[in-house]
Image 1: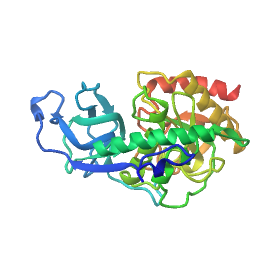
Image 2 (image 1 turned 135 degrees about the vertical axis):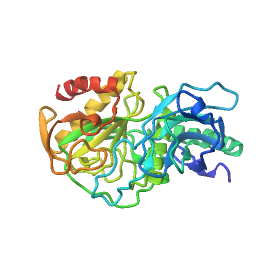
Image 3 (image 1 turned 90 degrees about the vertical axis):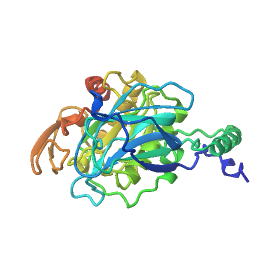
Image 4 (image 1 turned 45 degrees about the horizontal axis):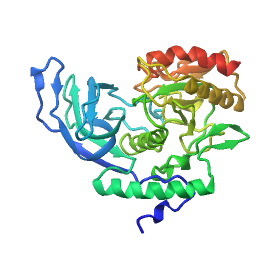
Length: 359
């Protein structure tokens, strides 16, 4: 009975676990030069992703660090105090409230955070996508993973599939999208521009962790941000693998939730990792270029030059509604929003992405 869910030729994906915690009022407060610093908080269960939600429109500076039981704290990570992107203002999935980006924590039991100011109603949201939330879960996941590895090996099934309509991609079913079902059928727009993003995650992760990261981001976008589905159309990991993101068909002009005011005229490609001071790998850059080259040409667009777009407005948009904006065919999210995304180092690498896509 325990092993039965693993008896499948598809890679075994544990059922995600989500839970929330109202932020404790205790902290070091103004005694710290860094503002409010929380106490060390032991989460009710082990988690892989953590994020913050609060009441009102404040955007405090946030940093967080995590650790597993018996291990050292990792480094402090800056957390954007608003979602990276979002639905277009006219979208039915648009939702205005204070919510941070999700942060990949690996396998963590403890969290500590610091804030420039403490907003009201602060809550922490946790997601576990690796089947390790409790001690029993860890035993069960280990058993099922071992059984599933044998079944998949016998079937010789590859999780990445080839398709004559584009580059090889990892389909939604292979990263556990059945555990993050979309709320509505997707809407279709046009694809004139490809926006490149990054995620607030560790740059060192395994191949299996990458799949868990994608599922964790999807659950956070859907259940905390209130969006219909994962915001990105595609995601690329450091190994050069491409993941199909938002539901609706990779060859369709699916409207995502990644660049507010421009989603209906673009496709969004997120690189898994934080690229403020670290570069994306050459494998990741080549995969990003290969994907965008196919996607733009599939929709009858060149990969070079610029495109005429019209801003749909929005609170995280640089341009008022109705503004005509000419954008490079391959742009960074910061070109239309006041954000660091896709990180200073990856933004510089976009020149190489454009060269590879055109060549």
